[in-house]
Length: 242
Image (cartoon, rainbow, N blue to C red; front, top):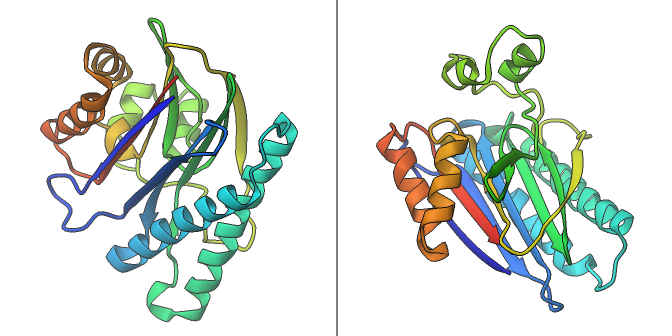
């Protein structure tokens, strides 16, 4: 496995409230985290960086080679919940950070299975052959409208309320986390990203860029494409190659 990442403040924002971290366990399995902070420049930065650091610390501390799928799921859930409590407490203790929070998407790859957990509208995709499969479902106002048939996916990307999310880490003492698993085989790619990428680069472009560029350059190409399409938001992409 190989992992490549990049985060960029985009063409408009003065600071980057996204954060990412990734690594390999000693047995060669992999993990990655993407967070997109909210709550003002200071609060967003603190929420996303704190969440990434806490989740990474918990994964490194609690992972054991040979864990079952249910054990991995529990480990990831505990790691995210630990980050949620930490960010929530920091926000309560510092008035300048009140209301801060962050999206979160975590992927742990063990053997030929990817375990994915998320809250908010940062996403994970599986690129396998000619197909692009969105593994996560946004927790957002426009996603509710899509589910009701009031908007198409294309309309949702341009909707003025597309940035309003319905779940975020650190906002409440308890966080509901969505979880899924998928097969992950040789030649597959998992792309994790903040909405600064998914709002400006469509699935066909993602597949084309990831399949036609060297793995070391593909993430840069994704970020550059989002910037050329406006770069209105911070942009983060992490690509895990099997």
